[in-house]
Image 1 (cartoon, rainbow, N blue to C red):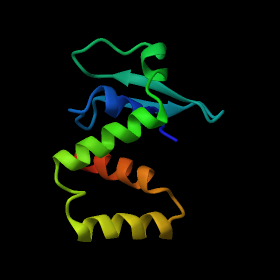
Image 2: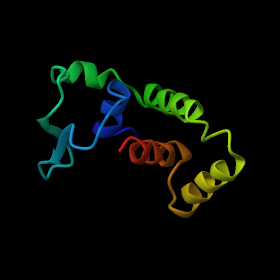
Image 3: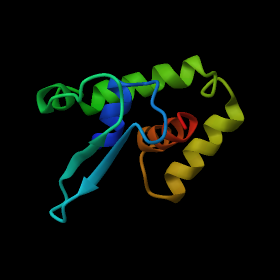
Length: 102
């Protein structure tokens, strides 16, 4: 399931660390706390329109563009990480994209 950060990465793929801050107010719901980009802060409806499939498709496209998924060793490592952490491969890819975006 794509979280708020991952959805924002779909909307703003040129993300740099510090562009936004997300907090959890203790009820498990993530909210956008700080917005440090030139573009206007996205409205809730825009963020909610980024579905898990949209996020997954976008990150696969980014991975392909970065030629990561073309490397069989990296692909194998992603699958091992997913199995070891009991996480699906899409979420591992999302984490990798987040790290590469820094």
